Image (cartoon, rainbow, N blue to C red; front, side):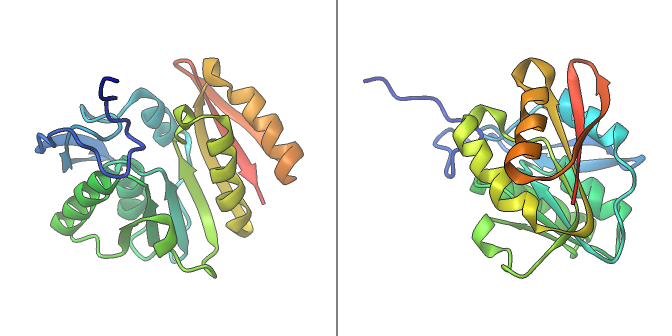
Amino acid sequence: MSEQPDHYFTARPASEAERRRQVVHLAGRDVEVDVAAGVFSPGGVDKGTRVLLDEVPDPPDGTHLLDLGCGWGPIALTMALRAPRATVWAVDVNERALDLLRATADRLGLDHLHAVTADQVPDDVRFAAVWSNPPIRVGKAALHDLLRAWLPRLDDAGDAWLVVAKNLGSDSLARWIESELGLPTGREASSKGFRVLRVRR
């Protein structure tokens, strides 16, 4: 059997990292970030994430915020730059991605950003906002498990903002969240083949 290529949802990518820095535009400024092979969208901010960041309101400051499936960190970094008094949790299974984000956050002095695996987030933390470009390609069952674990952790006034490609089931996912989790889910925006969903507590 031939060796399978890495997926961005691999915990320990086997490929060469080919680590490098590049400048991207986040939170209204140019930011130098660390990127590498073996993580999602190593060439820069992907189209779906850009659509999400263009549509979401500023995150509530002084609260707990979550980037679910953070990759090298464009969403978490935007949260941290826009909400300097918040505690930002950036969660991913990919250890290379977390290392990249930690390096970028350290260089930018964002000590309120914590790039961690899921088990490192304290169980009692509730989130005022969850932003995510969720890993649709992990498969429907794994994706549902992920959302079932995290969306109920919104605080009483919290919102989750998810970006999903229309052709990858954005509308069916919205219906599933409402029926399975009982959380009202609206289609807030559509752009470039993506839907932005807003999930309310």
